[in-house]
Image 1 (cartoon, one colour):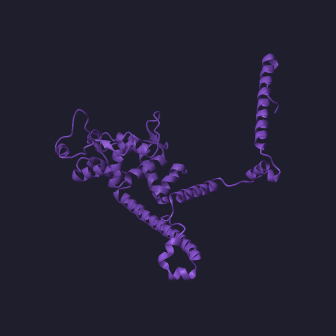
Image 2 (cartoon, rainbow, N blue to C red):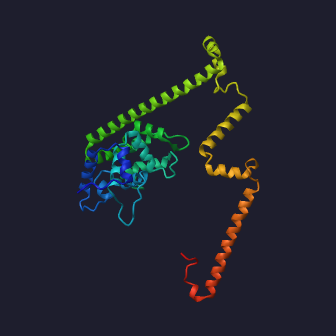
Length: 339
């Protein structure tokens, strides 16, 4: 089968995860291994069944919500190739800190950045396949009893990372689940290389942005120095470098509160002027409004009254035509105006 044409979601996945044509071909092969019926859609059951986490549906549905995929209840949670690629790449490119954040996302209904102790207990029971009123047993239960939680009962990401560092056994099934999905789809070496390439690409992008920012800052400083040099004069500029700050137009330390307020107001006006440039239509309107160009201040009022008269005339015309159609049966189904 031929790889389907890339839609908007697939193009976004290609850009986000730096997928080459070879990567897309491999993902298409992995998709076809699951899509045995060759209908172009697969279910979440087909993707995630057969792992140690019995209640994998929680993580799968949270993953779909994370990447903005709306599951159709009529088609038992079916997704296409673009959604499959986005979901698998998102899940398998998670580093340990990101996977911890994802687990918090699963049990943070308000998405406010923290979970309660009960939410953490539900998360632990869920990934260990324990259903209430049962609880975990053995080393997991002992590890839970040794934990110390914040006094306010709110577990934030730093607390979650510390808990995982001290007792990794509690959340280990989630990491084992990710590893098994890696083995099923293209293998762990492929995803390790993909994550390394993404990280190196991010470093290159950050370095390029830093260079652009440095060039922009250098250009800005050069312009400021030219202004200071012009204000001071060459002789004073080079002979008295210790007083250059007094001629700096951007130095606000010497400004009063009123001057600072005026400067902010002027900056705001400049921003508004940039967002709302003067158009030719507005210039024509101003000429009709200003007396020095032969206009009158009553122009706006007259124009508004004229517009209201036209509006009233149209309303009266529609009312009259409606009344005529109501009186004559042969006009009821005719259009209100000739085409």
